[in-house]
Amino acid sequence: MNDDGISRRDLLQAAGLGAGALAVAGLARGQEPAPPYTGPGPNPYWGSVGPLVVLPQKAPLIQLTDRPVQLETPRHWFLEPITPNAAFFVRWHLDPHPTSVDLSRWRLAVEGHVERPLSLSLEDLVRRDDVTEVVAVNQCSGNSRSRFQPRVPGAQWGNGAMGCARWTGVPLRALLRDAGVKAGAVQVQLEGLDRGQGPPELGSGRYRKALDLEGDALDRALVAFGMNGEPLPLLNGFPARVVVPGLFSTYWVKALAHVRVLDRPDDGFWMARAYRVPLTPRGSTTPAEAAGATTAPISTMPVRSFLVAPDGSAKLPVGLPVVLRGLAFSGRGAVTRVDVSTDGGATWRQARLGEDLGPYAFRAWSAPWTPARPGRTTLCVRAQDASGEVQGDAPVWNPGGYLWNAIERQEVVVGPAS
Image (cartoon, rainbow, N blue to C red):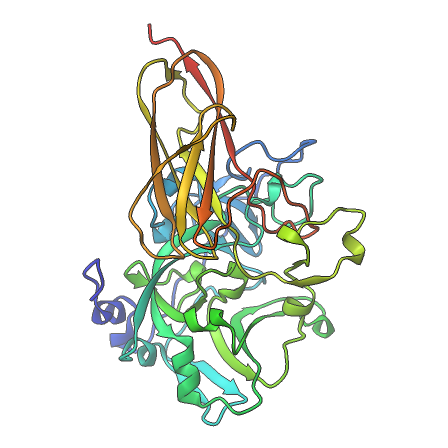
């Protein structure tokens, strides 16, 4: 039983396992997306620019693309540290991706350099004795890409390509122990059900990511079948997905089909060519130096913080107290401090931290403020994590549009109260 009163029996019934199989309804296509922001500078808005669309199991979300589906969570959903399933962002890499899953046929294969290959149904996973939970942030590597200047190609995300959920599943290490990893194994390759249309020789048509067998990330990884006490939405990876707290979502493979133990490093497209960043402080380089930069696979999320409210959409009266509210997180450990500024970063004061849901979860924060004089002012927030990393003000640039964590600003207008 979890904190919401949802048991594994409830999850089985909700997933239709009592009847033996589930075919999820096909996904409706959204309306044609609006063109992304193409101004001379970075995106001035908190979120990306696009139409709101409604797809099965989802609230209205901002559509970046429809093939494959990429949907961003609007700002107001981040007033709470747990993101509802219906509001959780969506990012698929390949088209087509699953539009239905027949559980009478779906099996998770644990294979490769192992002694005892496994073939597991969803019921096999749900009924295990080692099912556990973790609250963790899932963030796209390109979150906030539309902030980059010079601009870079790729989905022009605002700040909403992220979400935090309570994930229920089985430790990936436990499945590997059951399969019996052979001596000489070095990595675990993860592959989903989605399939691409690219040239077969490129290797990009199958989405495959790998975790080092000896890395601490694998110790935290789950094969998750539950999300906030319910089965995973189809668009978020039903029937099972990988959850790797602290790492970017490129490793959180959706609609998981294969866990493959390798006796050599994965040199496929999605590890050797995609999702790589320069081996420099903060993964930053310049357009002139990018071609010759030594790179490595992107992995751990840097510390970040966000102001969610006020959002600048309404004038704030002089002398009337308001509460600044937002979220912070890090892939390097728990958020230990959040500071806010109401004068554009000239001075800072400490905010109050909300409930600690775990070292890789959103940490809510709040700070009271009473505007003292009319005019325009800029609100800022910065965070610090358990590793000692403090969010900085300098922007980052790399050709992939990854790792953005510069301090976000929100201009507000203060007006007379009479």
